[in-house]
Image 1 (tube, rainbow, N blue to C red):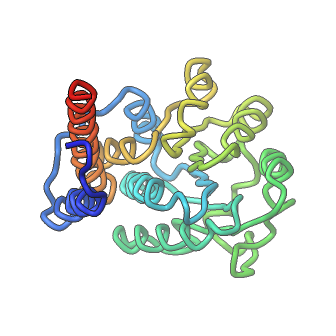
Image 2: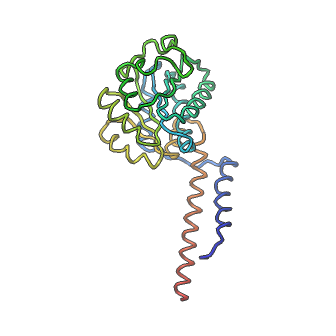
Image 3: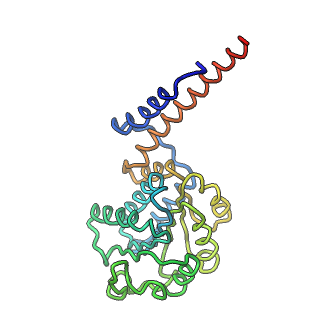
Length: 266
């Protein structure tokens, strides 16, 4: 029991991940209050409100954060909101663009009328201050070079006063900068989604009412998918992750039992 070959452990863990994903078994998901708050904040916005999505992660965090982004974009389009996307992490641009285009197609949304991607600009703090004052100071055109004033949905969007909600999808400390500048200086309403390891850092902001809600990790994505009634990568991933956690715990118990018998024998 104390000397199980590691190859067997790898095989069991692989099966625990692959089988739930292939069979699409779904485990029940309990929605936590911070995720419910995030959902309610977006749901209460009037139709046609502008929502700014900030892609602040790269491919290393994609498995955890992409389902979250897709769920929130679907919710925004379902509520007939206008989506503006920017990227503070350059490698996050293709991830955000893929999610934006795929969700827009699902809901028959038109580029320039219902959504726009402004792309990446360097200098996080300067960009956030610029958006608070006048978005055209940093983004005179979208990612493809189309002037903002030629895009119908951007005609009356000039600064944070014209943005009903900021959604930051975070894999690092960019969320702190959004809160410290956009909320504290310009009064921007914010919802943050993040990797599980980053989420605890944002809870003081939620308790201080500086942000409206938190979506933490793959579990948070699964909870949001549950609220919008759309089974996606979050729910599927949580089933595989939960089964894998159970398997790891069992291996730990078996290993400890084996160790206790060996110690008693010695």
